[in-house]
Image 1: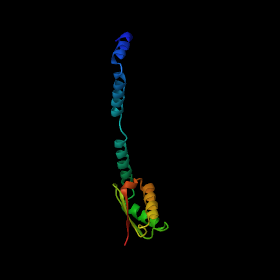
Image 2: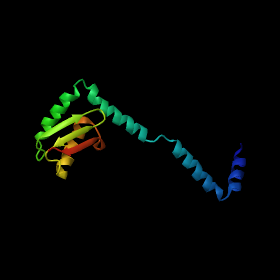
Image 3: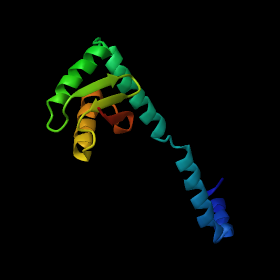
Image 4: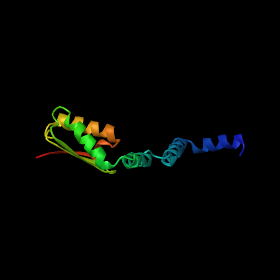
Length: 123
């Protein structure tokens, strides 16, 4: 296609050339990979880090329970860890600040996202 033909084509499109440009850009954006699949892979690999570290999850749970019990306001704590998430039972779970601190500590220690961590009041 010659340059002369291209300019004639753009002239014939008139006002529709902006619509065509918009559609082409939309198509390009749809073809770009989204970060969602990568995010899922990251979460799965972080969960499996706990298992592949060579330290049994029971040992990690005990260490984390002991550590959390030392935090102000937590009180007695029990931890259940798996590759999919963590459940924390603690006496101070009725305090929102304690829940936040515990969630952050567990997230940093395990690599799990906060959506995979549940804090429950210990009776």
